[in-house]
Amino acid sequence: MDTEARSTERDRSSDPSGEPDEGSRSARFRASDLLPSEFLSTGARRFSAALVLVVLALLLVSRFVMQPFLIPSGSMEPTLHVGDRVLVNKLAYRFGSEPARGDVVVFDGSGYFGNSDYVKRVVGVGGDHITCCGEKGRIEVNGEPVDETYVKAGDAPSSVPFDVVVPEGTLFLLGDHRSDSSDSRDHFGSPGGGFLPVEQVIGRVEWIGWPVGSWADIHHDADTFDRVPQGSAPHG
Image 1 (cartoon, rainbow, N blue to C red):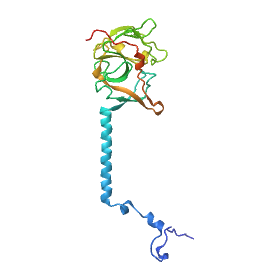
Image 2: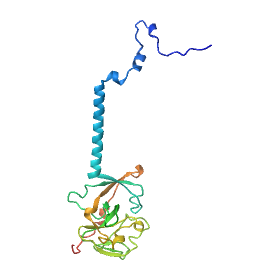
Image 3: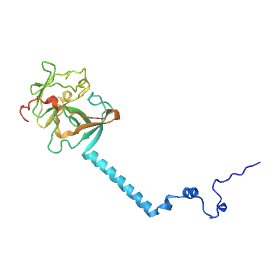
Image 4: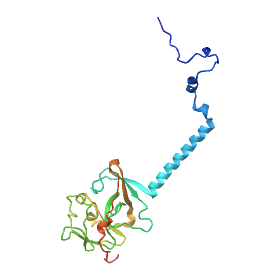
């Protein structure tokens, strides 16, 4: 015997009032029953405008304030690792401040290091006399041996000896993973002689933002150079 399929909705004829029960009424509510179409379209426009403003704000922040960069190599280990995404403060040197010894910076290497952006540590600034390696196998800046605790364990401060004076307005840059870094030491014969003009610096690395387990601010180790006297090399 066939069984007829029946709706679970209550038959209005069985209700003396002729009105559906509360559950049926609520099931039939739609947004258009509660809000006029004019309100809905206005809300959508406002949401779209707010979204555009958020995107523009993010673009402006990235362009002028804080920009993310991906670390593609191990030249800055153990401070930075392959795949780290760092946040670079683009205002760090825009109001009279200049890169200091110990700062980790991102810079445009075009014409000096190669046609790309790079990340290295500032070891010397204009006027500094830098040599390697001294009696104890350390880099010396203006005659003062530097204990570079950030250098990757097992690496020498440099496998290549050098004795340079940093021209004014330029920087001497090295990677923390000295045996796996192409830096100022490798560009003595390139335009600029291995020294990078300060204006090529994009900003200072402030934080590791990704991956989540690596969240950290970057210690710039300025105290490493606390005992280094001011450079007295001839300017120019």
